[in-house]
Image (cartoon, rainbow, N blue to C red; front, side, top):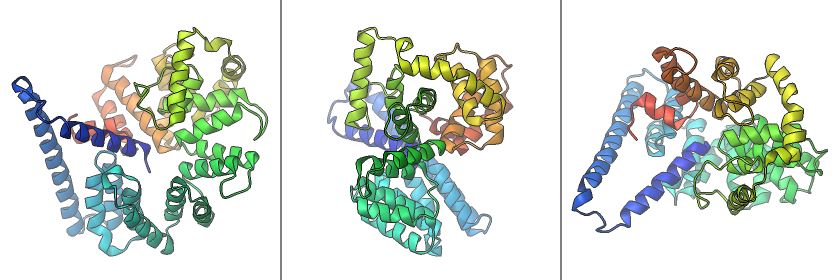
Length: 392
């Protein structure tokens, strides 16, 4: 499932827990803040109710199909898993395998529905039995997270086509550690590569790290730098640390795993020691050695190379910030729409910002709105809130 949904859910839970544990901390001086917070919650609840009633009315009047309701549920899930659940429940009685699978994913993986994992697994199993192949991938990943590697491999093997990056990354990890399969670092690297190509940020990170060492194949610093940089741009702090870039999540405690926390501390230590990436092989034999090849690939129409170079120019990382170059590389990516959703979401949001703020180009509201809608459609939460008129 989308990583943004999980992170949003965790943030909501953290905020709710914090508010619930404050007791009488609100004094007379901040009653206004409490009132504003309550008003915001009520406003969002009213918005969700209005969206659901609109979807329900269109469906009951035959204006949209059950499959369209599922698509709308997935669109709204980036903001509200609860709203997505209501939409999916609306068409559950049709017994559509896709509906069962997506509802199963919500129950099995979303923190908002903790305690309903078994129900989610049941729905995914029913969906898989009905022939919906995606359900096998989700079940494989569920059992992988439960450390039941035998079952995980059974469901992964049942997939006619592993099209989800998270599944490829999980299988790669199984081959690295010999969990449920015989250790095979060569196969692991190939699965990590597939995961990266499907736009799974953690898969990109794992592939980048794998390319820095022998075992799965020869060391390849240019490709290692390439995939680590793109993973970092999509929010993978472990990848950013490997390239001496500051973390984006803020505090050291805001990490996905203990390994990420160690990476964060490593970056702090490197910064304090005055270490410079320009003295490291990953920079000299990776970035510098591979830059011309990436530029040629971009000129020849490689959208991954365009994303890599466009992002560097947007962020001012390793290349000077240049919005003309950003437009040159990003606009074809948006038009082609061939890269995975997380990449398209980020690219379109950045294009929207450029046209909103008039960077290099004249401010263009129509273009900004177009790109923001595209970003929302591909799962960007900030863009979704802008398009749907949801206040922070």
